[in-house]
Image (cartoon, rainbow, N blue to C red; front, side, top):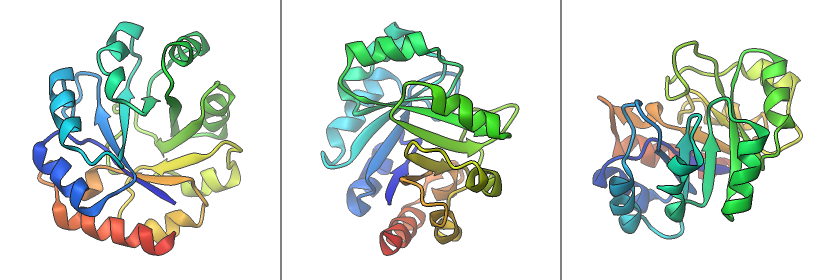
Amino acid sequence: MKLKICGIRRTEDVQYLNAYEPDLAGFICSQPFWRYVSPEQMAQLTQQLDGAILRVGVFVDPTIEEITRYAEWLHVIQLHGNETPALIAEIRKRWDVEIWKAARVRTAEDIQRAEALPVDKLVLDSFSPVSHGGTGTVADWALIAENRPEKPFLLAGGISAENAAEAARLRPWGLDASSSVETDRCKDTDKIRTLVARVRALS
């Protein structure tokens, strides 16, 4: 089971990831989210990141031009808005990256709509009417278990060392954590170390 730590935005965050080696690092590439990193910040952070850690760019309703500003540093483009099949097809044509689609799960139809898109993996997150992610709220795991998609998926929303074993019972491809490994809005080295160790023990 893979582990993605999302919302990387500081040199210290990169140092923590290099020390404990999760599988993927997520960078918020759309404004106005407070974890947003500019292309200039992205260039600096990825130069310092261990090359074995794959880089995921998280976008909300981006234009092709916006993605282009980040694409050279990315292994995965993760879409969190209302992106169309046409946009996904254009991304596929331009860049040799995986494409993931996030769904804020409130109903079975939310999962079905995301799975119908021509993407490689899903990110199943908790539903919030005011946020596209990073809320720390646990998703409706019972609903996800009852409507488990055929495509590989990451489970997001309040993932922590305390609930990682329960999350693993849904047999996700990976887990996606952000706010649970933060203290006072900054990534916490001890929380990252503990979560990485817990997930490795489950794999």
